[in-house]
Length: 195
Image (tube, rainbow, N blue to C red):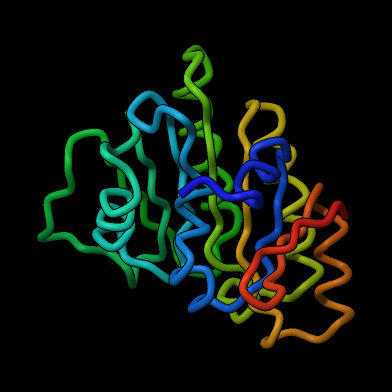
């Protein structure tokens, strides 16, 4: 559903969603932010530390009439669903939970695959909160700096989930510097501020 927040976010290339997983899921903000005006003609990449691939596919179907032309899901091996068949156009890559190099390589492969296509690219990292359980903050900061640079070079818009209840103010302030905009819940509405 198009809202003031999603319209404002479409103008940003790097966005931090600073809210609890429940708030983001209930509002549909993740899929609204990932979706373009023509979802069936876009490429979408999700780095999923919290959701299984089938849940991501179901979320797309709940929020859009069609899946993206290509949906890449990079997830920890523990989220693997080897006996499950995903729809055509959905690609799944598994990496060890703390393997930032493996995630970076997988992201680069998908972005390279889509490089010659004029279709819009959107990306989601869900969630930094989980990633920070496996890796120290300074290493995650360097990884995010590199990752957001790759997204920008590919012309992709990206958003990242972070639960503010799970982190101290210094960690949040440090990570916020990597983003063009921060989205926070303010009562019943989403507040978008430039960072």
